[in-house]
Image 1 (cartoon, chains in turn brown, blue):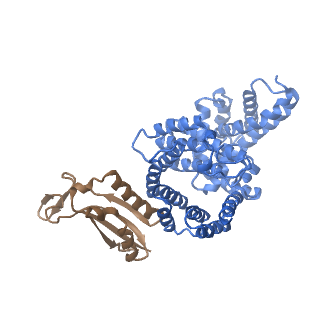
Image 2 (tube, helix red, strand yellow):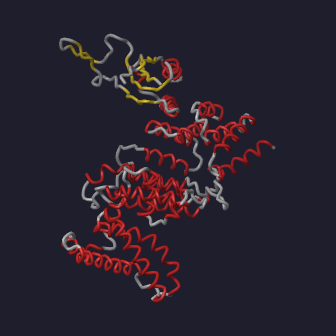
Image 3 (cartoon, rainbow over the protein chains, first blue to last red):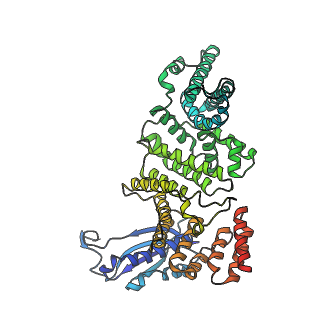
Length: 113
Length: 412
């Protein structure tokens, strides 16, 4: 079994606050992965709001949020267990984030074992 | 003096109640290393009571009588020791035992002794099964035979299990005084887990003896109640666990038929649900939600709460969401199966089947039982296939009977 990070990206800050229905769908998706004993780390939600997001750059340059350079922002991540990247991709496909124009990056975690 | 015959009914009851307390109080003086001495004195006291009361009748205050005898036995024991081993035994210990205060029958000293004993018994060095067996023996006064009945195991197996567990108990340097948080904190999780398992052993018992089941559940509740009465142990999690136990217990009567068969939730006679236990569950659940903590016990109590409510439009959606959260805290096959059931209740059988089949618990009887149930109204042949597999896999006789009945219905 390999481990994969699923990294969630959203385009619009307004989508960050989900409706109760969206929240239910999201939890159903996450609960389903956990029910298959394939959730390694439930990860974290990363706050995008001003005051909660800064980017630190060389030469003491600090900017607000990640927004100045990329339009999308990372809203959170989880780590799952899967036989292959295809399986991890199949898991990601079930996430309701696509309904609101978001996307998911699937990345294998380097096994340092 | 009461009627001499009444001791026959009184003694087993008193024994159960007082033996564990007495051992706990005595152990405070002897230390865990010598728990056998404490138990010998307690047993001896009850033996004397059974002889004496049979002839002279039951005294006015049987409990006080028992403690007076126990106290004297303990003093005798120390006297004898000090004669033979004057060099070894510290006089101070013998002096201590003289004080009336030390053998307080109720109040803080007794509660503390019992509480300390719970923490001593719930030693993570022992397996869960051993901890529960030990708890039943030392904290609840169960005999080896009774424990064997509850586990559907041979008495010899239980005896061996207890011997090993007791060796660990003696070698454990746990202090039998509940002084401060540092004594308690490292074991608190394990204590709650053991009480939770003790309760489940009763609630989902392998035995279909309704009496044993109720006894196990009520003992688990009694011990958890003790925890809620001490400022160091009345945590949000303790209250949540107690709420869970109350909600579940409220259905004990309704979930078994006269023959001991399990009656599924939907077929239960709701008039048999114990409303007073449901209300107590509500009370403890509110106390558990004082802070922000959401533990496994909170979530399970929440699910049990929704089960006690009458039909609510969103009931199963609430239950499903609680199962989702529970899954994130801890993976367990039973939780995953229950979640799939709730999923089917919200989104219908077909989606439920899809969700259940993802679990791939193909060697689990409940997995096939669930799929049989979900397929039954849609694809009879699939339902029969899964029910047959469930019959092959289940270890419970009653479960087998229940499924076979369902199979008969589908085939005919």
